Length: 352
Image 1: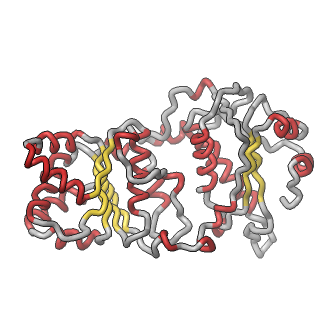
Image 2 (image 1 turned 135 degrees about the horizontal axis):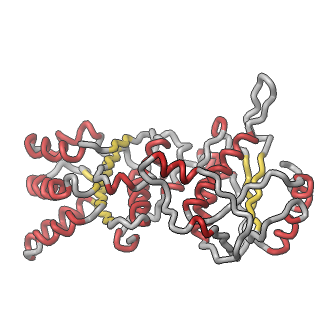
Image 3 (image 1 turned 180 degrees about the vertical axis):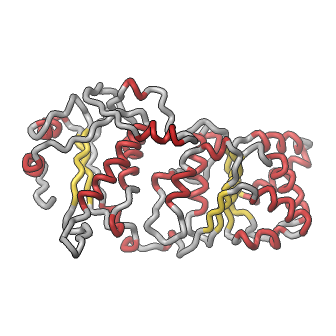
């Protein structure tokens, strides 16, 4: 599915940077992370100035949908109109329109870079009309949503196009400076999360999670995902690096007080390092252990009672990690009853 989608960028929702002031609502993105909106034939309209990662967001949503099994195709608007024009010349126009209408998710990027020509307006209406309430469409544009109607041109056709696009659509209006010219000092502090990864990867699957496919559309599905399911016996099956990266990314996206991100994650997989962990607590045969530390030097200290936010911050981070593991059908257990002095000594973590 991913290969056929022809996405412009290797983007994922887990890699979205919420630290930059771009008008992105984490709640909206979390809702869109459940690809049920594709099955519901809802559109996503993304607008904003150049460089704010509109294409990245569109491709990340496409990536999520393709991984969920939906048919996806990414096209830049100029290439879409060129393809439709060529199909008229070679007699395959109806076949091309039919192929576009059958896609479960169509992504149109760089929409309205210039005002539409007469032929482009007609072609766009055909595409949108064929897909209306039959498929989901993502459109990304530098042109603000309020200016789409005049830039499409012909008022009658613009009414028809905008009415079908805007109906029941998610509208994401991004803002801010270009991400392409950001200096390293402007990067979000979550870049401080480190992962010391060994060359070999192992997974630990829990049989009762087989067939779990992630968040559904109902509250019951959400509660099912969130309910406790602790694994205390692991099998050593290979884990894809992408899965471990996704779990770590979930931790990176976890909210913290004042966005200070006062934590570090150490990935332990080498046998000699697992033996070090076993000095502090049993590991239940797991071949992959994450040690989560808080850095009090960078945590928020409440001025009224000197309460450090770090404990709560890493608790939220661990929740994100456990839920991400569950979504990938990977069993997990969170342990708090260990000797921290042994962990600090064995892994040279005296500053934590």
